[in-house]
Amino acid sequence: MSAERPAPRAYHYLDLITAAFVAVLMISNVASCKFVQLGPFTFDGGTILFPISYIFGDVLTEVYGYRAARRVIWTGFGAAALMAGTFALVGALPPAEGWTNQAAYRAILGSTPRIVLGSLVAYWAGSFSNAWVLARMKVWTGGRWLWTRTIASTLVGEGVDTLLFVAIAFLGAQPLSLLLRTVLSNYVFKCGVEAAFTPLTYRVVNALKRAEGVDAYDRDTVFSPFRSN
Image 1 (cartoon, rainbow, N blue to C red):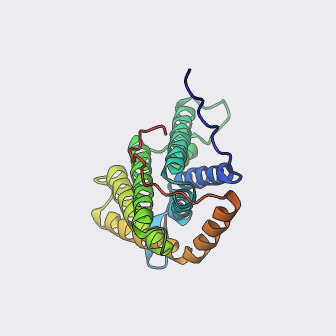
Image 2 (cartoon, rainbow, N blue to C red; image 1 turned 135 degrees about the horizontal axis):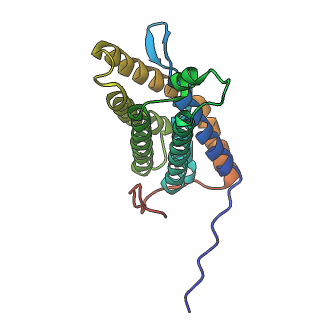
Image 3 (cartoon, rainbow, N blue to C red; image 1 turned 90 degrees about the horizontal axis):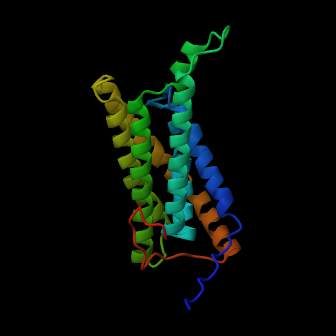
């Protein structure tokens, strides 16, 4: 007779953080259809909100561990893929008689397959890179110097994310000078947001550790993105 598995631990705030993470991801994807100029920075509109998803990712990995972060990353990936597929299907369907906004719909929500692919691949690779760096550094530092983990993981994750998205979505379709400015602006802005939010990240992480009674260390974790546990 096999031994029963212990019941999974119930957390108070993990579901809330997961929902907020997915909401930020999906809103950012829609806002990315517009390029904006903000002072010296040139970037897609989703960049205004998207760095918050990396802060959520840092909090998830720091408090709940890589396994929990992995589940949330896949949840976000599935939601983003569903959203992109739904937008594409609705755009392909013939408009109702008298509805004259088909061109506007396609201009805003009808992302090309390259943009959809770039967004999904960049999100997936960047998020897992971010979680891996933070989890490994937490073990290396013995849980000290949280700011080094959040900033270092963001430098890696955002770098992977930004380069992949711009290369897959726009290389060859937009002037190289615009793409280089976009990559640099995106990277500097996203990492700057992470650094600016470090004091708030400290407060949220410490509050969650106390409230949940957990402080995960991934000492024996298998870091493959494709593991289910």
